[in-house]
Length: 105
Length: 274
Image (cartoon, rainbow over the protein chains, first blue to last red):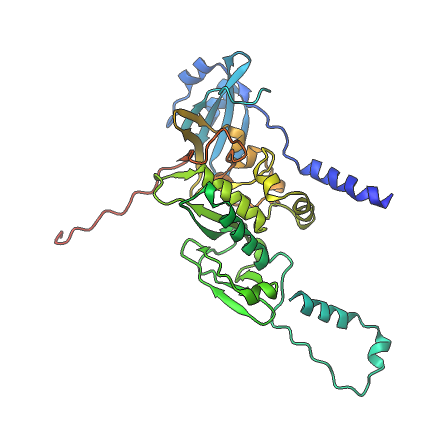
């Protein structure tokens, strides 16, 4: 019994440590996103009002990175990533299109 | 070193009767020249990492190998770090450069004595990495073959400290350099010099931006989880590179767009200007 206990325990611990499947960001319409989001001007409050909360990462510096996604056809989506500064202003934006080599979800 | 520790432990564990049986003998003295923390870096392992670099140098034929110390805790002072290789009877100082990188000297006696590589900082306050650098690359870029070799050397050398001791022991038992570096689930983290916004791969005509899930340790780390990640204080400098994906050649350029532009260089002083 003891022989089985350790591998089972180890597997459970490792399963607990394994990275969770990444959550996609809130889905938005790409056109509306492009119209409303202007780096250097758009604020956190405006993003929340227009598109709602989404997946984000907070850094010790006070910066945040936010991820939205937009349908790109064929069941694929593009990533819309924003960098918000300490004052909650969008500083940078990038769009990542789907690539043929992306794993199918 | 291990022999010494074993001797000390054995002496400490002798039953009282055995000690009482030698009342007339002079007290025994055990000289311990240094102590070894279980999480100190193994000199033998780091040398194995250097040998791995030589064996797989074709991944980065022009590159040189250094090791580098990086902050693991917010409180650690990364200035003025000194480093030495410490065995039972030998101590070899290791010069540390201003960027906290160093070259590990090869010393047969230190190898025989199973020496440790010890910094003048609490070991758990820093993380260690191999640094494989091809000279002459464009600014703010790395070469994918260099990163592949950094992973192989780093895992072989036992540098990564991504888990609690228990989890680290388990993962070390399960993960060889090939398992870690050739798998999309290898979870080997790389760090940039400054906070990162975007990473782009370029190989010939092919260009791809890395997905969000490959930045910031996957973007899934809670504050509690960060304590077990050696990206703890470098989350905004952390990324995964697709080192396992052989469709990207070793010469692929990995380029970085940072959160903030580089600080402007100080204006040059012109002689004679008032």
